[in-house]
Every structure is written in C-alpha cells, then in structure tokens.
Length: 101
Image 1 (cartoon, one colour):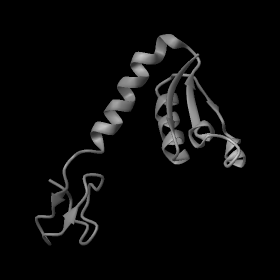
Image 2 (cartoon, rainbow, N blue to C red):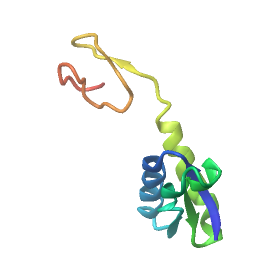
Image 3 (tube, rainbow, N blue to C red):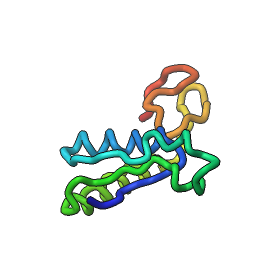
Image 4 (cartoon, rainbow, N blue to C red):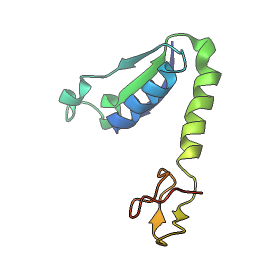
C-alpha cells in the first residue's frame, strides 16, 4: 500500500477518492475518525489519508489527480451575451444561461 493523497480538507480527499475509484483503482481511507483526536495529536496526523491498495496503480492515480488539478486552473470566461465573468467550471453563464462557446 502506498499513500496517495492527504489534506486537511476532507471533501478534497473524498473527491479524489471518487475520481480514482471511478477509474477502477482500489483505495482505502485512513484517519477517517481521527478528527476527534485533534488537540491530542500533531494537527497533520489527524488529516484524512487516501491510500492505494496496489502500488502498481500509483502512476495512473497521480496522472488522474494532476489532470483534475490542471482542469481547475482553466481561466475564467466572459459571457458573449451579458458580459458577465464565469469561472471555468461553468458551461453556461450563471447570469443569463447563455452557452459557453
């Protein structure tokens, strides 16, 4: 087993786990219930950890994580209809529902 990802933000770790497992890679979580020990442990030791079951899946899993991170760094876009700024995550303008072209 190999540690793949850990963060203080549990939602990010669960999101990464969903992406990895939806691509056929088995994972397990460690420290799921360690949040109750905050104050008794060094803070980063209570962070949720995502571990790979098979070390041979590491390169593929890292590639998937990097693709996700890279995708979140896309630039904002300006709606051609209402000139409102939209983040890259939106396919339609949040203001007027015009499609991103």
